[in-house]
Length: 181
Image (cartoon, rainbow, N blue to C red; front, top):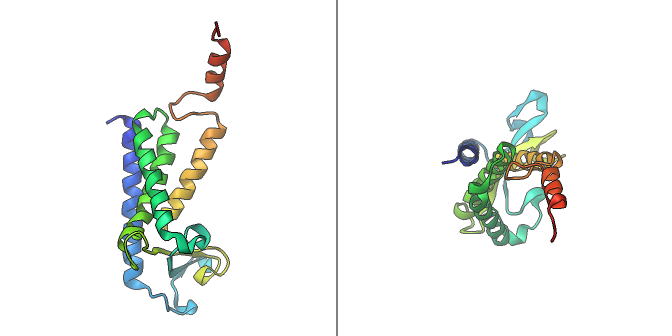
């Protein structure tokens, strides 16, 4: 296995394991009916642990289209796996590993949690600034990985690094210097 593909796979696996472990722990220890004053909190109340089952995408949008979200996430995972052998950039491999790991983590919920296959609700539990997503949407480890991977991908693209490890500027020069005849 190529080093960049190995990096992508290891990061994805780490995200999946952390996501599953935290969701199992949260479901076993918290209830959706836990009063806000009894929800665990850390950092002086900056972060609360509130169990919320999310039928939608980020910010609970598209709650009626859970099956579509599952299909789109599956397509993203398949696309990333298909381009993985062509990766030559460490930052791209890291970003895509975080994204695919987070997508698979949430897909596991979509496939195996109630109310059923392709309609399962994602377990979210991290609520910042207040309990029960009072001030900011609640999220989980998979969502965090997807967000960090997305930011890393944007920063890598802004630096002009392509997935094959080349600089976008170098490709432009190469195209401009080639003889069109």
